Image 1 (tube, chains in turn brown, purple):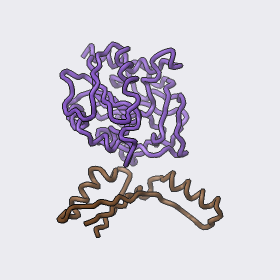
Image 2: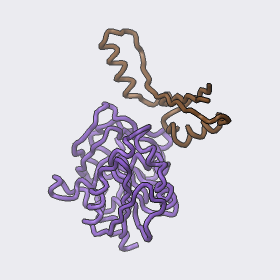
Image 3: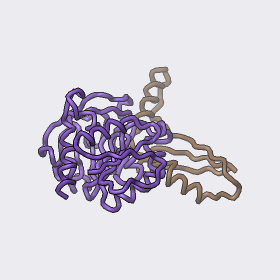
Image 4: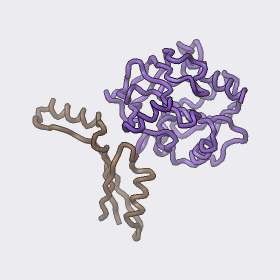
Length: 76
Length: 222
């Protein structure tokens, strides 16, 4: 089974990289991009029987820094 | 004083930190990240700068979960002294020994230059050799030194005198210009600037000497 973890900076935490991407899009002529937030996607191949709680534990302990980041788990 | 300096794959200031401790009069043991125990009789652990594990995932995140870091957390829990510089500061926030997090510099640039710091408290073994409000020049060299913490944490750090150093001209966007913070018992210090790179005339400045000397003085009298 697979799990996909999306890690994003929490709302309210300034994302300088997203801001730089927004500027670059504007420079390319893409008007109307009001905000960009950049995050990461982590794909996990898991042994059958691994449950969401275990993935949550992985997020809390390593995959996300919950001081500044939030995460969403997609199992599939 | 017996100092242990930890080396992770990708650490690059470990030798400089060891030399700074030695020049101040400490005995230094070098410790590899896969070691599970600290040497006997260690008074202070130094976590050096560099790019542990290639900064993969997040700066300091993999190192914070290495075998030796369990011993570091236990050591700090028993009241041990831990000094984390640059990547070492990132490791300390990732272990939870210090609050907050270090994010990408606000201007997205790697900043490598001497910067002026204000000494915000002299009430710690690390800063007692300076004067309150002194301005000292210490080099920074980092891409991810933008200190971030929520308002409650900042209020607590300020209220408890746990901000050790602030930037005079905030180079990286850090909250309230914070360059270094102390733990509740003031025995764990994390800072982005490199005092070990300012301990010899050949470095271009010696403002870091007082940090290592005052540590030794405090330990000698303890």
